[in-house]
Length: 207
Image (tube, rainbow, N blue to C red; front, side):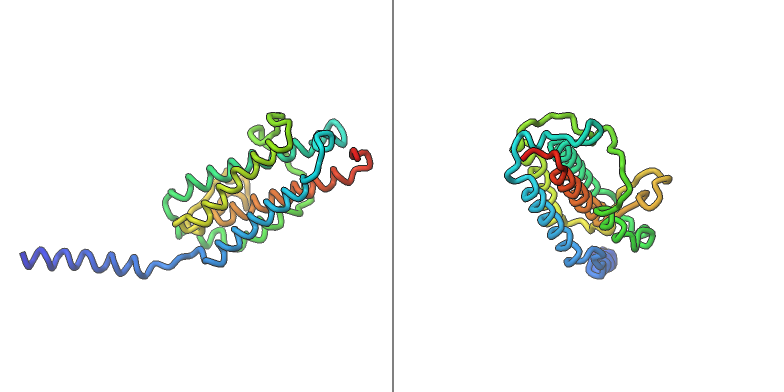
């Protein structure tokens, strides 16, 4: 019996010591930075579309450009995708070996908000005109943004130890931790709010 107790003690205390010594890579200030960015960009979204009429949100500068309604739908689609990506990937295996690989690319994610290069939305993120009313478009975006905020606030996962993977030829976008991935979509929101501002400043924009 004494031998059994000794064996259990030897097995238990190293594991306990390891758990106690494990440091959180994702800091409280980084978590708060995401929360502030998510809440601020949501507020900016609501401010930019507040007071717009149906005619205004469906105005298109030309046939090749999106309307404000289409931009809003696009943002809602990506917000839903962000929510599901974070929800599922917080349960993937921790990869401390990749931390150094992605170190220093936070700024690239943030700078996407003002990157002048034009992108092409993938098929899954192209607006399909599912929502005609502004209230429905606002609800679509804010519904998932609120879920993302709640997830970031409550998660027990270390966002610096869980990763999003894309094809190797994507360069710096190939591997990103969940903190960086969330930074990108905050920047993505601001990027498209700039697009909405440009539409509103069009000389032909309905008054």
